[in-house]
Picture 1 (cartoon, one colour):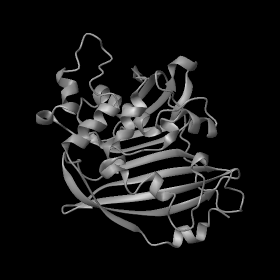
Picture 2 (tube, one colour):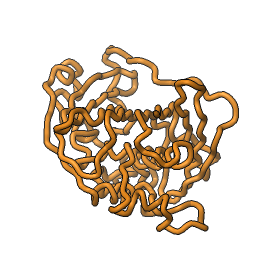
Picture 3 (tube, helix red, strand yellow):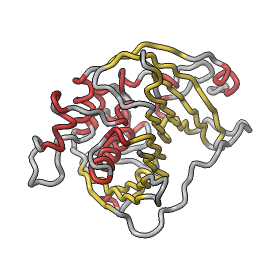
Picture 4 (cartoon, one colour):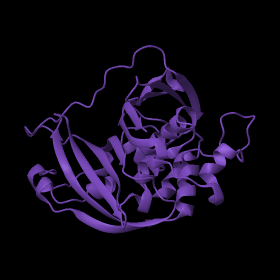
Length: 294
């Protein structure tokens, strides 16, 4: 069978050196919409946007951790681990969690250690959890958990895994913002390292069951965190401690994201988020989404 859960879990970790510089950070930020200020009265060179695009003012959005060093090892790397042999057209990114141990530096060299941390049998699909820990000379920087959803590969009687569903937030959101997705956004975002043709090649997208290429889930993920930081965290990226989501639906380039945010109760706080496609009657895009912060 294409996925041998025991072999995948028993395989040793895969370790590699990664590096990034300010140009990689700037390209990532542009790929998630930095500079495209939704408030048309503010230019792309507004000070709030230059924090993401100008080298002398640059800070790093923690979701950059998903692409630093071209995202290696990451989702695609997980599909080549021992015990895993699947058709890329059956693969979707099911969820993502980033835990930030220290603020991400603008430039860095680090060691990334990746392994399959869990394999779950969802019946009609399998879910692989690819865990990547990244550390530099100062210690652990971040931990990434990517949930890789493989259609048609479940049903062997394995563990189903824990539920990641969260209770619906209470009351109306504290903030609602809309973020447009440019028609060429997937083509720009993929330059940060996710070359899956699902996001660029119409013919491949049709093989995967879509009538046209879709936006990377991690692009939506980054756009959403930027909206949270800019609106509820005072623009301070260093306040983010962890960021978790489940990819509940697709986004097509050219659509508009509607991002709803709820502040959690004191003293622990936390921010709950939902994201929908405003152009398609609020079709779900990101669900079970939470930002823990200082």
